Length: 317
Ligand code: RIB
Ligand code: CA
Image 1 (tube, protein in one colour):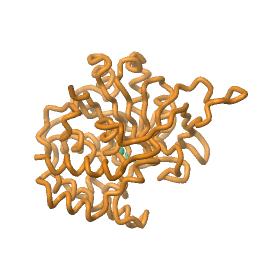
Image 2 (image 1 turned 45 degrees about the horizontal axis):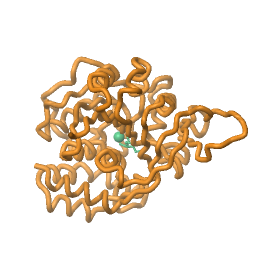
Image 3 (image 1 turned 90 degrees about the vertical axis):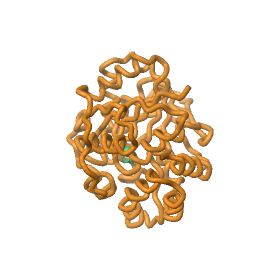
């Protein structure tokens, strides 16, 4: 039986790459997309989610629009400089024909998990606002979700917004601290591993060459994103962020993990930092005492992951 997958997303070039990966993997059954600000404003995220599903011929998958800003702080802006002003690498795709369902994302998340106890993999790949609202709306989801797989955070390496913070956690640190502390089976697929997996120009060209229209679509939307990586990181390829969370849901043996309590710093120069208790034994109490342990990916078989992604996209219609 494929795993029921619910992705909370801010598409976003790598979000689109992740969604198409999931849609073309028989281990997964995409039951919905919920949207969030982050790479783009939430209205654009919703349009892009609909566009991607329409491109894939999957208008049957519902989209629910989520929060337009973080829980407690104003929205600082979006990442047009990374993903293009349209979020899809300036590919300027026509407007979607479909619409989002008439239900806020957090309610949709709660309803989906409660209707399928123990079956839904919840996969946030943007700021965690919708997920924190959902937990507060109905804490029963904590015991009824199959697993939560988060793309975000940096436990053993620097962030990508600044030395402390990764973008999705930085986007809403208060929400992230709620989500990491909720007590559900949670795996963090953060920069520790996603920056080790690089899709270079040769890989993306080979993908296009070998595949059909899905591969060509991915090649198109990655031009702008590739240029960002070249300018900012001096890298001849792109970091494989959101598709890595999907890879974890398909085959967790691609990764090695460590386990411990996680806090998210919400204020100060390191706001948005994911700070893990990697020792576990202390002589006194502190802010990590009693935090439920989470799994954090720290190693990845990048070669095998890249081969899996290529296989699925090349075989896609
Ligand atoms: O830091 C990488 C994350 O930030 C990815 O989810 C990307 O899409 C952006 O949202
Ligand atoms: Ca994302």
